[in-house]
Length: 69
Image (cartoon, rainbow, N blue to C red):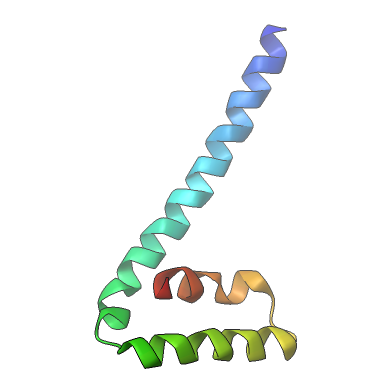
């Protein structure tokens, strides 16, 4: 049982590191998107949809998509 718990926390730690890295990247973009109007931010949604339709992977746009929200 202890081995299972160690594995769980090791995996959770990896996930948290990945999430913190993403959150830091999103926070760095905050100033860039703060200057955008509401209309510009709404257009970003359409831009992201087009990029996904064109074959981009979600991981390629997720930082910007989260920053816009």
